Length: 272
Image 1 (cartoon, rainbow, N blue to C red):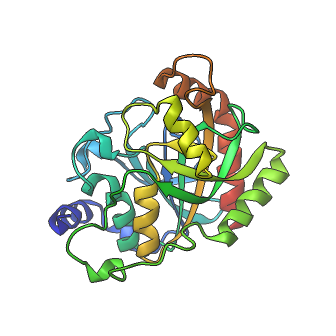
Image 2 (tube, helix red, strand yellow):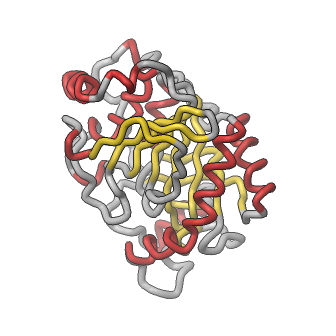
């Protein structure tokens, strides 16, 4: 990856972004864009204006950065993400995490919409990610070693920090939300998976499947940032669902779950 890309992005952001480390960084996936509640917005910038990031090309990703306060906490939120399948390389995918690292952020919440594989799941459920399976066989740390990003061979035994997962569970329990721990299978996209692929992922222990989150989680963990992962089950995966899959279903699920998503994130912020 080109460090110049990250330098230019950081240089574009106002000084207010680097005055104090955020208490939490948030990266919002499909359908999660309207789930933030701010007491005071300090900075708001469109992705299109940030060098090296660019506008999101996926519906359901609003594409703006916000630095705001909520309940006395300073939050740096990326409303939408770039995906590897968009074909513009790893830089825009992990740029939000690299900026959080430069801001001094020590905790990040990664959210996404996923397809349910575990038969206990139904659309509208939440899954707290405890581990993942990288089906892509590639990750953003491939390439020359950058010392600022940690060791050359980072340990991945506990990518998703247990204490943050416990806080997510506490929030879900207080709000009465349907939630379970699960393993997230990461695929490159943009195609949805075949029924045979889903059965293969199920046999390997996956509970949900999606096209994001793992690159950012791997990068953040390698850099020493504590990671929490939260997935909204937007649909049942191929072969489990009896109908054809489409992105509109993902957007509709996010819209229906918006009040619960907002409550979930707000309560979690209050606990960090």
